[in-house]
Length: 102
Image (cartoon, rainbow, N blue to C red; front, side):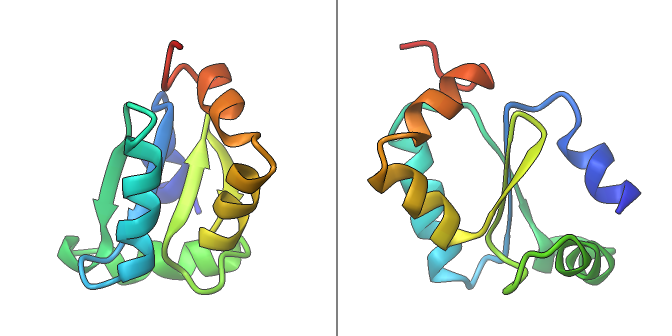
């Protein structure tokens, strides 16, 4: 889990993804639609991607991708992010994290 923490440190939004995952792409599109500054890690393109994926599962992200961190806080996967959007809470969370300014 330390590897995950080091990857999200000092970044407003981090998404752990796989290049073939359509839900990961959808969440990236949603968040980028706010103009948010985000970092995306494609686990299938990392040499230690499987290790990171195991750490994400241990943190409670099932399925392992997408795994979204906002303001260094683990938010969850696609369902949790979509719930925040439906409840009109996602934009405020992105603002507090410094990912967007408006």
